[in-house]
Amino acid sequence: MRYQAILLFITTLATVLTLKAQIYEGNSLQETNLASLVESVIPATIVLLGESHGLQAHQNQHLEILKALKAKGLKVSVGLEFLNYPDQMFLDQYRSGELAETSFLEIVKWNSIPFDFYRDQINFPNILQGEFSLALNLPRTISSKISKQGLESLTDDERALLPPNFTLGRDSYKARFAAAAGAHCPSLERCFAAQSAWDDTMAYQAVKFIEAHPEQVLVIIVGEFHVQYGGGLAYRIHARNIMVPVRSVSQIWAEDLTDVDLQKELQPSIEEGPRADYVWVSK
Image (cartoon, rainbow, N blue to C red; front, top):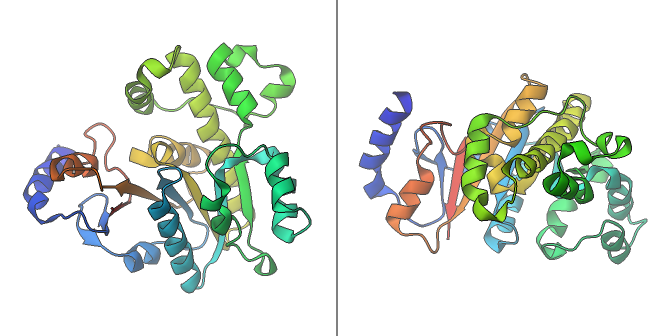
């Protein structure tokens, strides 16, 4: 009933929402601002910053948030979905200048979104102030094998790369994943196991870091689906440590959306609740 009431409120609010760059509070969809978002972040918080991969506007907003957190006086470290945690040593060497960028990208097998979209975020944390950039994810060779052959196909060495007490995502997340994956996934069970392995690995690495560095804030830059409705990464973080504060920021690129489409994107899910703690709409 609570979210049905929210949906009714959203309908009445729809006429005042526009397609300019705006930040909304996820529960009420009241317009807010970056200062209020940053004010909600305290040391030991993990900030989940969703993105559409390779979108310039989202890169710009990553940096706005990072700079605002830093201006508040927080120590800010950054976690990356695109980098695998066994490669942390190479990431450290790249940031310290020991490893040239071309060599770093070759070693970590960077072959997805152009590195230009993430260079500034990776280099944002100040090494001299004890801030870090973190490789968070499971090696793609492992997630790919899971999606094609299942968890049971992993060798003992491969299984050891999964986080301790690895657990699949919740049922509502699985249902949303199934709707999004559609025909692209030959086996829902295997594909969802791979998706869950990504979420749980990133969650484990993030919680381990913030428990060791409670004076810092960890901002994780990750694809939108992992952030939306709290069912992916946030759920696994809280499963591993319910005491860790999490703030989620979902980003919507609205250039090609009608007003009606935008309202649908903003609306909380009846099953899962609000899209995120904060929703940043831009075009």
